[in-house]
Length: 336
Image (cartoon, rainbow, N blue to C red; front, side, top):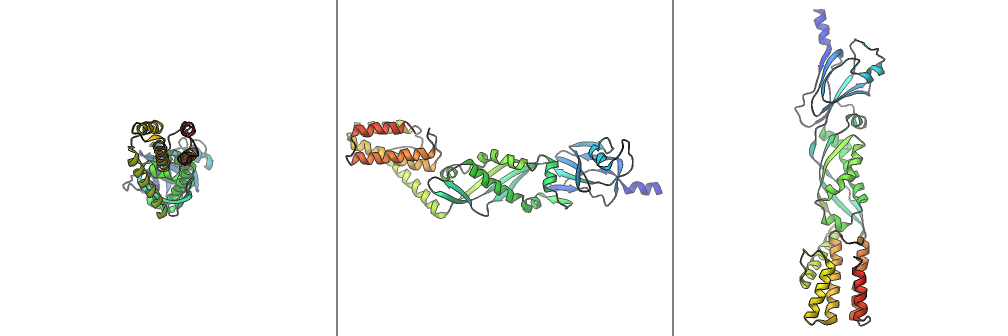
C-alpha cells in the first residue's frame, strides 16, 4: 500500500499531446512532484523538450523517446553533481516548445516608416501584411523569450513584443535595401519576397526562422499618391502621343525608329527634336514609376534625361545645330 502510494508521487511518463494548434510553449504540470529516475520522455514531431534546473536551461531533446537516466541527462547531471548511476528521484521543470510553422500571422506599421527617395527626399509610408515563422533553435528561443507562464500561445507571444520586432526589422530591411519610392510602388507585391533574405538573419539570432513574409499593402501620403498618379497619367498621354506601347524594352532603338519615322513623314529636324523631348520626358517619368534596368543608376539616368531635355529645347531655340544636338544625344543615350 505504501509503495503504491509512493509510486503515484513520482512522475514516470512525460509527454505533450497538443490539441490546440496555437500553443508555442507548454510546461509539463508536475504538481510539485518529483520525476522518477528512468522516467519515459516522449517528444513528438514538431516538438522539442527542455529540462530546466532552477531557471537554468539544461538538456534539450529533439523528437524521440528517452529514458531519463544520468546517461541521457549529461548537463543536468553535471549541474546537480550526480555521479554515474545516480538513481534517486529528482525535481526539474520540463518545457515543451512547438517547432511547427505558424502561418498567416499579421503585422503592420503603427508609425510611418521614413524612406529616402532621390526625387522626394524623405517619404513616410505605412505597410502591413502577414508572415510565417517557426522555432528553429529551441534552446536559443527559450533563453530569449521564455517567461514564467506555464502556457504561451502564439497570439500571446506576438502581442508580447514579437510583432513590434517584426515591424522594426521590416523598417530596417527596407532602408537597407536602398529602394526608392518608385521601386516600392512598382514592386509592392514582391517587396516581401525581396526583403526576406535581409530579414531572416535578424530572426535567426533569436532562434526563430522566418518562413515567409508578405507585404499586402503600402500606403503613401495623399499628396504623394496624387503626384504619382499625375505622373502616371502624363506618362500614358506621352506614350499615346508618340505611339509607344507598354511592351517596348529597348528605348534607344525605339528613339532611333521614331526619328526615322519623323524624317520619312517630312517632319524635319524640329519634329525629330520634339519627339526626342517627348520620349525623354516619358522615359524620365517611367524611371520614377518602374525599376531601372539600364547601365546607369537611377540618379544618373534622371540627370542624363534632364540634360537631353534641355539640349532639345536649346536645339528648338536655335542655340544648337542639328549636328551638335544629334552628336550629344548619341553620347547621352549610350550611357543609359
